[in-house]
Image (cartoon, rainbow, N blue to C red; front, side, top):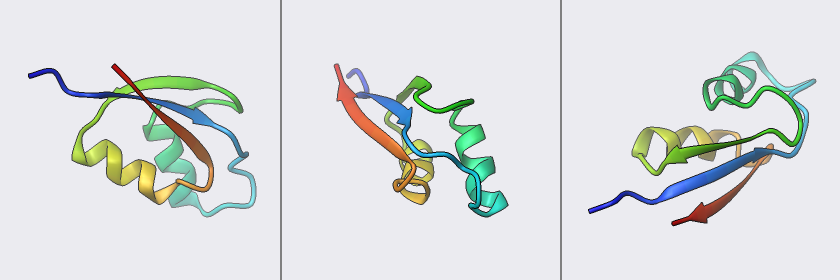
Length: 62
């Protein structure tokens, strides 16, 4: 059974947000505004996305 993939894009700057949120964005692999990465849908990735949901945009891809 193939896991779903998520396309995560940084839509807002991490300037003026706390260090933990900056580190979470970095852990997702996002380096700059409008940068997009693809991740497998795992509980760890979903938790990180949930913590910075106000900064990122997420799309499901197959």
